Length: 287
Image (tube, rainbow, N blue to C red; front, side, top):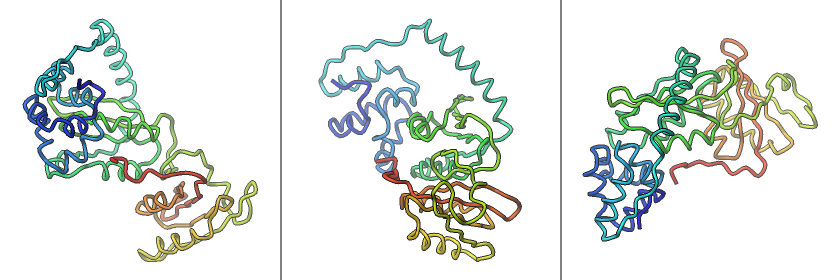
């Protein structure tokens, strides 16, 4: 029996004929006809999440899916109506409080054109998140509720709130707490960049300094990547840069390093790079 916890990819792999059931359920599922989007989205979405995205009742969808393959479906328990109302009221209360604090400091990303072109927007979403300062929120605009993204960004420390405005989904992703100047490449380690003001040792670490200010692209990135060969678990690379090296973060992650960047002043950024011992970086979250 197909259950709500099955991934859509599993359903389609074992029962290809169910594609027509998904498509017939709601217009949102027509995107599954696109092989690229199906490959990108289906492995990340459960049947229950797909029902929420499409705005259909999960037991109704499961009944149709099982019936289409000759299986008998036993309805699963739903959340009681009074509990749903209680959760909804609390959700709205939290929403109002959060919106008051973040809507003045947001990065807006409308991914509807990306999806309409047949592409997966996950990469640009993660790139945008990596470029945000602490205290900012990502305001994502989509044609459907991006439920799988909740866990993807949740693993990176983000909370979210969601609103449906006349069929358009607005989701704010944010990290609790304040802070204005420090950008963290992947994980918030709580590093204090100021302690690396000068070369030498910090709590037993060897500090290597590299000044790439004034160099034209791609020279700064090349110099930094070359210097990584000298950085081990007991060594920190302190880079003096004239800009925030946005394109560098992903390359560091791929090599098992983490960057913490602080804006010191106009045209001056300090970037602390450290090796993550035993850390396996997740380069492709869609797999």
